Length: 256
Image (cartoon, rainbow, N blue to C red; front, top):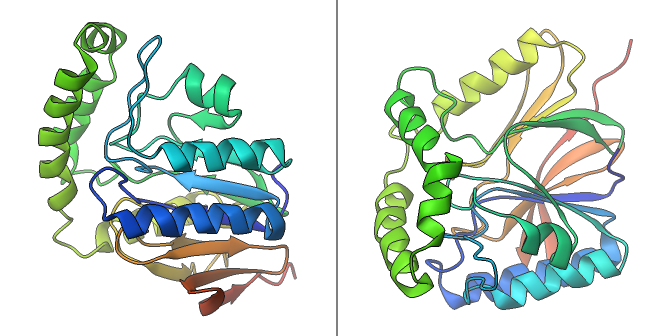
């Protein structure tokens, strides 16, 4: 179980994002040390992340340090792998101290039965070609071979391909993933909350029959927004300087 308040954010794409995005993210993580008990990073924190045995990417060093400080302060950090940062390993798990998870995550957050997925490859037809490519990229043999490349060359190759996928936004404006969310909630009435990212499209809604909530905080790359999950409600929040502005709120469904 992950306690609340829980901050959930997605798609900051550090390494491709302007420097102000990294500064805003570090500031939010420092804020979370005081105001949150859990932080969930729902994929694509970095535009490219890969771990060699003795080397890690230079980009985003301040964020990695802030995450380690969160862990040391007793704030639990869960990182769900996205399509740009699915090659995490010992540095994140052992040196930083966070929980790095590849694939769907199911558990309890602030009393909500929650399912979290980054969102890549979930649309049945549109994402079929990508799912084949993802199988290759995440194959242990492919990862082993890539690790033998010099980090400078490997990063150059990865950033050229990540640029293509980052700018190839869903043409449906996020509607496809919203439909996936409704299907997930309909298939499992015990599910209170379904969280996804990837589409860079902010959305919050409630399934009519089950009353379960689906939410996408949007891309931190585009605007400093995140979800705040507490026992009573889920909020879409935007950072406005030193203040937080609640953009939208959905209360927990009535158990009756």
